[in-house]
Image (cartoon, rainbow, N blue to C red; front, side):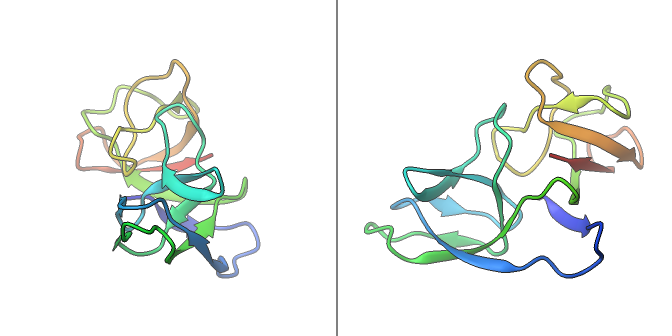
Length: 129
């Protein structure tokens, strides 16, 4: 889960209501992008534009709105790495396919590692997009 932990201006990030893709399941803290004007799970090498604020299952019509925060360059997010961390500070890594964590893959990486609390998969890391 990507959890916003720091912004340069120290204020709260505004929450926006955005349209969802029909019948998609969203997890709290999931990395998302807008596709055809609707939110969907972010591909592993695409920088997210939004982070889901709560879990949600979109109906077949997909016309309900999901609360999200907009990703900004000054935001730092806390998450975990999917596996034992081999990447180092400053590396840009890809997202895991679940949209909630990172990987060790640096080819096509979009999440810059700015802090590491440990190298096991359960340890927290901090990233910016």
